[in-house]
Image (cartoon, rainbow, N blue to C red; front, side, top):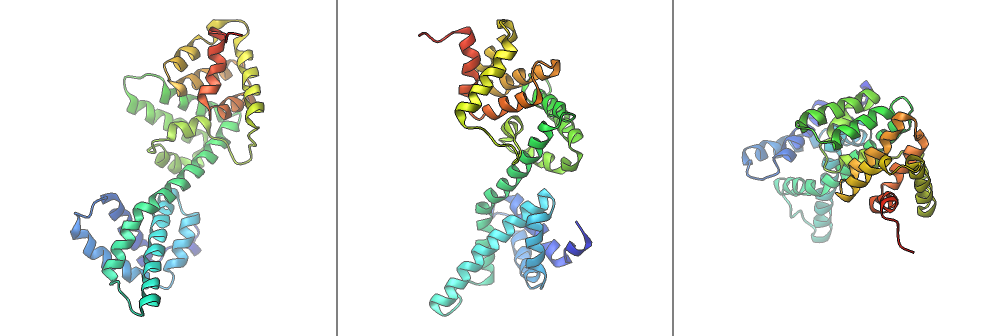
Length: 282
C-alpha cells in the first residue's frame, strides 16, 4: 500500500478494535465494548476516516479489506437508522452507544460481504494459476494433497498451501485466509478466471465426454479409480484422478480446464465415466 493510502492512527485503531470485536462473536465481553464505543466514535471524528476506510475496502490486503468492508457496511446501516430517526421524528432516538451496538450487530450481516470478496479474489487467483503451464502442477499437487487419504491431514493441508503459494507468491496471504473457508476445496477444484468464457452446458459436457474418451482409450482400468471414487461420492478425489493424467501428457492444459469447468455439475460429469462401466440400456 502506498504512503498516500497510509491509515491515520485513529482509523487503524478503530479497525483493530472492530476486528477484535468481530472475533469475540458474543456480547459477553462487555469489558471490551465500553472502550470500543469510545474509541470508535473518536475515530469516526477523524476527517480522513471514511476516505481511508473506502480505500481499504477496495485496495487493502484481504484481512484488512474484510474488516474494512464489514465495518463500512455496519456503519452505513447504523447511520441510516439514525438519519431516519432524526428526519421522521425530529429528534435523535439513538444514543451513540446504542448506534454502535446496532453497527456491531450489523457486522454479522456484513460478514457475507467479506466472504464474497475472499471468494472472488481467490477463484480469480487460482483460476489464473491453473491456466499457467508452469504453475498448474502446483494446483494439481495441492488438490491431490487435499483429497487423498493421509494419516496427518493438517500436515497435508500445510503442504498444499505451500504448493499454491509457490505457484503464486503474490497471493500468499489470500490463500492462507481462503484455506480456512469451508468451500475452499471446491474453489480450488473449479476456479476459473473472469477471462475464461464457460461454454453452454451442452457444448461443455460434449467436450468433457471427448476428454474422458481420450483418457479411456479402450481400457477400463484407466478410469477404474475415478469410477470407484465417484461411486463412493468422493467427487473432489475423482476429479483429481482425472486431472492427474495431465502429468503423463494424456490431456492438455485446456482439456484440464474443460474438466474443471464441467465439475460445476459433478453428477453429470462422472456419469460420463460411470457409463463406461455400466452402459445405459437403450
